[in-house]
Amino acid sequence: MDQNWIFRTTPRIVFGCGSVGQAGIEAKAAGISRALLVTDPGVKAAGISGTVEKALRSAGIEVVVYDAVESDPRIEVVEMCASAARDGKCDGVVAVGGGSALDIGKLAAVMRTNEGPIGKFFGIDLIPSPGLPTVLLPTTSGTGSEVTPIAVLSDEGEHLKKGVVSPYLFPKAAILDPALTLGCPPGVTAASGMDALIHGIESYTSIHASRFTEFLAYKAVETIAGSLRTAYANGADLEARTRMMEGSLWAGMAFANSGVAAVHAFAYPLGAEFHVPHGVSNTVMLPYVMRYNMVGALRRYADLAGAFGAARDGDSDVLRAEALIAAVERLADDIRVPRRLRDLKVPETAIPMMAEGVMKVTRLLANNPRTMTVQDAEAIYRSAY
Image (tube, rainbow, N blue to C red; front, side):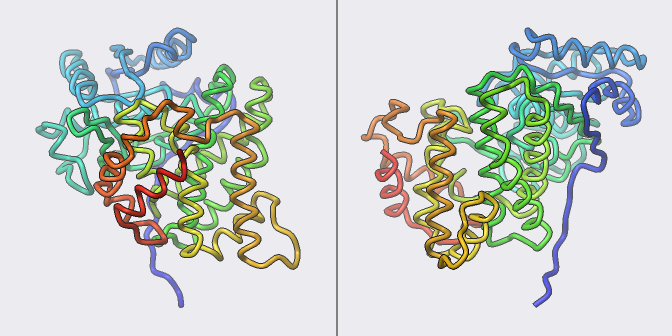
């Protein structure tokens, strides 16, 4: 049966080495004359945000800098960033960095035109009106935030990560320059790359996947599986960095429309409660959630084994699916991403609390190919311990 589907993405994507130099042109085309440049201390120290600022000023754009974005940002960071935009009389936002910086930039832009607090907007389609125009420049190949209508924050009060989903979070333009990822440390390359891979896997197996998102997700998995080891082992390999940025882009475009699922739901309590980096928490939970989901996504896992080069002629779907899970585990081991909760110093006593947290992430569990109870969630966490 033919599917009816809608596909949304960032309206303008600029890709290629050296494209960071077009930041001013793209910001000006978006109607920005005084930009809030949002970044984090690491990106600033690396000189990357300075390169973007130079490009903006060369185009005649005034710049106010907010450089206090943190990993797994709290709600308060959005409020401070939005205040900086207000106090600086900014008419647009340019964000450069990893997913946290991009998410904060997107949320600060909508908070300037919509009355808060930000808690009103957790959920789907709850932002009433468009925000300030935004231009996003990722420095990791991981989150895909530059092509998604999603931003995630840590709610310390509830010890949970929460998402805002709205078409108003799509930027006016995304600039993807693989050269910006050359200085990304091996550990960050590994964790962010696994995050992008998991976006592809979960998008492909989502019950809301379409033929178009399946195409993008498969290509993303195939590309990342073939490039991540090289990007991790030799960060100066520009070809591997370019392929990784392509894979992350395609995975982001796919999951922006089909959604991610239970792996991400299991990662949220780990990030919010124990501050485990997002890509690491996803990687730890991936094979255990996949084993649980296999009965509901057998054919799709069998398909993805081909993307990993793990499929053999004559193998059954079960054997192909099991080969996929083994290949995922081998990749994580090769790039030294932890694969057990005990390795992250997460106490076993926290498992019931985390399982309850998983069940609150209904936005993601609604995409999962197998329904889940809190008892299932607890058992999966225990299997990962």
